[in-house]
Amino acid sequence: EAGVVQSPRYKIIEKKQPVAFWCNPISGHNTLYWYRQNLGQGPELLIRYENEEAVDDSQLPKDRFSAERLKGVDSTLKIQPAELGDSAVYLCASRSGTGYGNTIYFGEGSWLTVV
Amino acid sequence: DQQVKQNSPSLSVQEGRISILNCDYTNSMFDYFLWYKKYPAEGPTFLISISSIKDKNEDGRFTVFLNKSAKHLSLHIVPSQPGDSAVYFCAASGSNYKLTFGKGTLLTVNP
Image 1 (cartoon, rainbow over the protein chains, first blue to last red):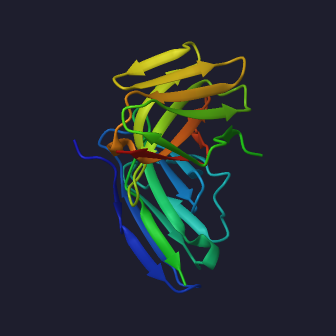
Image 2 (image 1 turned 180 degrees about the vertical axis):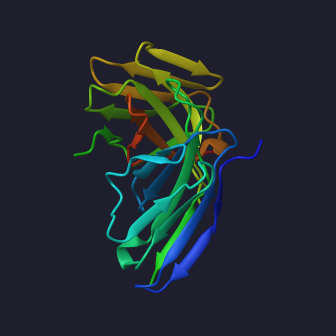
C-alpha cells in the first residue's frame, strides 16, 4: 500500500513568489492534515480536512495561505506571496476514519526555501 | 504556551544500553499519546502509541510508559541500536484528533 505522497520534495523560490504543494493521502483515508515544521521545532498543524471539509483551519495564515481538497482525496496547499519566514518543511498526513486512536501517517514533506 | 514538552534536546547512548526519552504535557484533555521517529530529509514515522486508559504499551524493543497523574510519558528503547539514531517526537491528541507535538529529542546511539 502506498504511503502519503507529496510533491515537490524541494522548492526554492524568491520572496513574493507563489508556491503550491500537492498531497495524495493513503487510499481510503478520510482525514487529511497539513503541518508545518520549522527548523528545530515539532510539526504544527495548519489545517485539517474531514473528506472535503476543512474542520480546523484556525492556525492557517489566511492572508497568504490557502488550501483545498475538492474531491475529498488529494489536496493542495498554496502560499501567495511567500515570505522569508515561510521557509520550512510542509508535511501532509492522513488518517483513516474517525475511530479513536487511529494513527496519523506522514508523507516525506515538501522542503521550502524562500530567498 | 507549549502543551507538549521534550526538555532534552539530545541524548547519547551506547549501543546495547537502554535509551529513555521523556515527554511532559500540560493539557489534561489529551487522551492519546504517540511517539514518532524522524530521520533527516524524511517525514515523521509512527513508532508506538498509548491511550490514557493504559499505563504501558510494549512493541518489541520499544515500550511507552504513561503517568497520568504526573502528566508524563517516556519511551524506552532496549537494547538501543545505531539505526535508532534519529529525532524522536512526542505527540498528544484529544477528541479533536489534532496532534500537538513536542520539539523533539535527537537520539544518538554510539557503536
